[in-house]
Length: 195
Image (tube, rainbow, N blue to C red; front, side, top):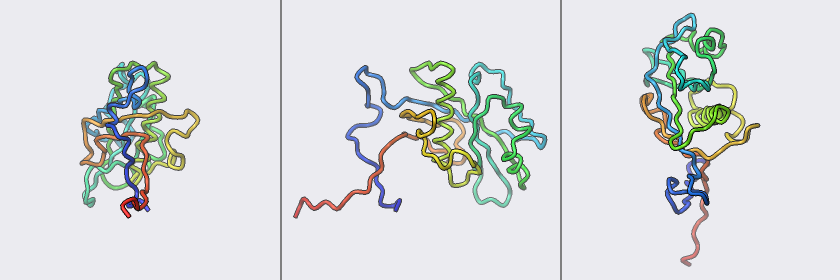
């Protein structure tokens, strides 16, 4: 079924889509991913959570590497938290991932919204939406249990159109460079107009 789907052609580059006030319909988002740092067995991580950038919480990716893998930097979990220091001391899913053979690391995604300065509540909602979209986009290897059975944007908070650009660490090419959400996919019919 998926191989027949095609991206719908809206006739313009999504960068040009604007509302009647000249604002982009797809809110530009940039995520700068840090180089992964090892999560210790006791759950401590080498990041500080004092930065003003993170006052509305963190977006993170858990990465696994072990010698028998054919691929490196496999993203196995996407999450958000308000307190990095406490989150990984009692996180059953990450504890399960850490118990596997090999190295478990964490990468922090710093979210910026070029051209806009959303307030704290909006930043929290954007972070939750981005987490949900990433879970859907990267679902193949993820150990996430939540947000896998509900389409992004259909939760209690609704959703918005986002144009997400991922920068920084690339996770060996596993993290998409750009995600435009939502977009339409179609299955075209055979064109019979030339008969």
